[in-house]
Length: 185
Image 1 (cartoon, rainbow, N blue to C red):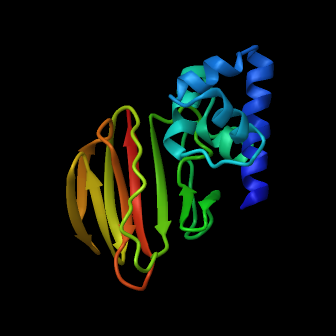
Image 2 (cartoon, helix red, strand yellow):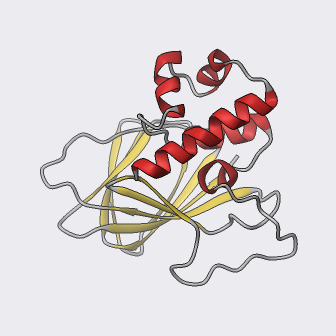
């Protein structure tokens, strides 16, 4: 994971260099202070998928290019075989597998997200991003926090929500939760 964070940081720094974007502007794009942003570029601090999406949208690149260093190429269709999507393990507890990474100019981001259980955890890390989000629980059970409400979702349950509201999740029980996350702006 540390190597992935460093690679993402290098790609962000490369994007800034190519487009001549000041560090202050990039930090402002995702609403954090300059020192924290510099640590992201150094690979010392994690960046959320939603913040990568904000940067990608603002500067006209795909989130997949920032996460995986792969530019989408397919224009008619893009197939992802079971377990084969490009993935990034943001933290030890979260793994994102992209299902649209190879399609040029996709209108939505679609991931299979796996969240490992954290026994005794009560704090949910929350984030926000533009648009709306749809989640469908494929395996396991999760507690989803959205704008002050806590909702428990079991396997097969789904939810569609305004992703500008603070939201986050925890796996419930002793097994990982796996869900489909579909975001649109």
